[in-house]
Amino acid sequence: MILVTGGAGYIGSHTCVELIEAGYDVLVLDNLSNSSRESIHRVEQLTGKSISFIEGDVRNGDILNVLFNTHPIDAVIHFAGLKSVGESCENPIFYYENNIECTLKLIQAMQDAGVKNLVFSSSATVYGDPQRLPLTEDMPLSATNPYGRSKLIIEDMLRDLPNADRLNQAAQPWSVTLLRYFNPVGAHKSGLIGEDPNGIPNNLMPFISQTAIGKRECLSVFGGDYDTVDGTGVRDYIHVVDLAKGHVKAVDKLLSENGIDGVQAFNLGTGHGLSVLELVNAFKDCNQVDVPYQISGRRPGDVAACYADVSRARDELGWQAELGVRDMVKDSWRWQSRNPEGYSDIMM
Image 1 (cartoon, rainbow, N blue to C red):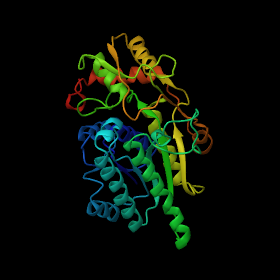
Image 2 (cartoon, rainbow, N blue to C red):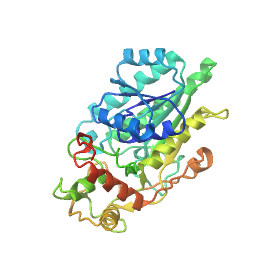
Image 3 (cartoon, rainbow, N blue to C red):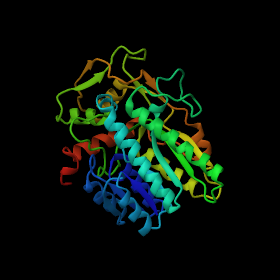
C-alpha cells in the first residue's frame, strides 16, 4: 500500500489514478485546504477502485501513528505542502512552518513505524537562478524565494537520514527519491480531474483557461523584458499525467530489489522550454479560443528561464515525458470547459 499525502490535490489525484492502474493500493491523507473530496470520488470513478481516504493534517502526529499502525504501508509519496511562490514571498513564516513541520512529523512517524521508503515532491526552484541550462541534478542548489527554500531545507533534512543510518548501522536504511519537477499543466484526458485552485490561480495554465472561459477578464503575464525569445519567462511545462507516471516509476524503483540507495534526485520535465506567450498562443490555436492578456511587472522570486536535463530519470527510472504541448493545452481546456467552476460543478 502507498500512502499519498496531499493525494486529493492536482498532482496527487492524477498520481492516485496511475498508482491504481499500476496495481497499487492507495491510502490518501489530505486536509482539503487546497483540494476537494470530489477529486477522490472522481479518481474512484475513473479507476473503478475504492480509495481509503483520511481527512487530516500531516502535522498531526497522532493521525500519522494511527495510519501506520493500522495499514500495511510500503512507501509514502509526500505531496502535502503549500506551493505558491508569490504567497511565500508575502508570508515566508507560514511556508516554513507548514512545509517543514509537516515533513518532520511525517518522517518521524515513518521512522517509528519502520517504513523508510519515501518519494518527496520537490521542485525545480531548488536550482535558484540557473547559471546554465539545461539543469542537471548535480548542479549547485539555492533558492530565490521562500517556497523554493522550504523545498531545499527539506531536501537537506532528508539527506541527513541515510547519514544517520550509517552512523547507527541501521538494519533497515532509508531510501528516498527527490523528484524535482518543473511546471505541471494539463489534466486527465477524461476531463474528470484537473487543476482546481482556490481563488486567484497561482499557476499559469488555470489562469489561461479561466480567462478563456470568461471567468477572468485578462491574463497577467509577469515580465515582458526577460532575455528570452519574446521577453516572457521560459519554463519546462510537463503534462500532469506524465508527471504522475514518473511518481509510479519512482515507487517501482524504491520497492525493487535494486532500489534507491540513500537519497537520489531526479528531474521530471520534458527537457524543452516554452515561453509564456508561446504557451498562450498554443492554447489559443489548438482550442480556437481567445485569451486576452497584458504584460505586467516581473513577479518577485521568478527567474528568466528554467528547463531540465531529464536523462537521469530516463536512464535510471525508465521514465520520460510522452505528451506534448498540444495534449497539455487541449486537456486543460477539456477540463475547464466541462468544469467551469471546478469540482463544485456537476459533470454533465
